[in-house]
Length: 260
Image 1 (cartoon, rainbow, N blue to C red):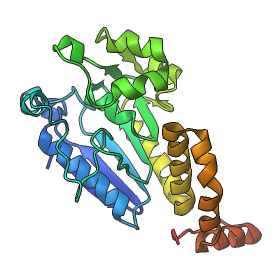
Image 2 (image 1 turned 30 degrees about the vertical axis):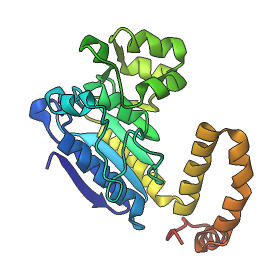
Image 3 (image 1 turned 180 degrees about the vertical axis):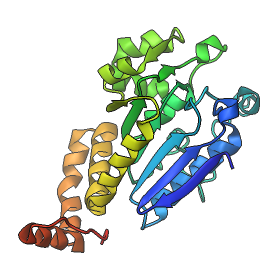
Image 4 (image 1 turned 90 degrees about the horizontal axis):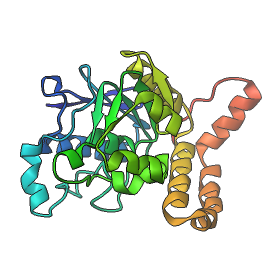
């Protein structure tokens, strides 16, 4: 396995583990990540995902020799809708309904950037170097950077790097708002896990509803989010977790949520 998947409490840990090849992503690795996303979405015991990588670099990009045929044939990312969720959110409208946190370090090129743009909380080591190198290889990004990077960091900033293939630093990414935390190299996973545990301890129905409402506003507009927010709230207010939240408030203790 080049993607190691394990659970810790309510967290699904997904480790990219091909360090001798700088974690270059193959089609097999794509399927493994897509299957892990499907498991995160469907397993009621899981509340948050955490993606990280073994070795000094998150990824050097795609294994181009493995992907050239698929891209040349206009196929895009090969997704099995019955068992997988496309982590790039390019092949259909299906998204993982639970939050995903990412920790990156060293090289975070091409698919690493595009993958990161679809996560919800991002932690980067200060030695991280981001880059969309496709124009230096003769083609252009197809995993969502052209759709999402301008929204994340601004049109001019995005074009500065998309059109040149130049790198930008972890400090640049933090300044742009693309990442939320910077750490010393080697500490990025610990910080991401700390955040994941905080998210996992929060009310699962509330967390998922927040994510759903934010995505609706971002993708369909604020009015669409307004139209559904109180119906969603009504369902959550009838949950056992709300009763637990109220009880814990009265008893002055931490709530223990069950996602029910």
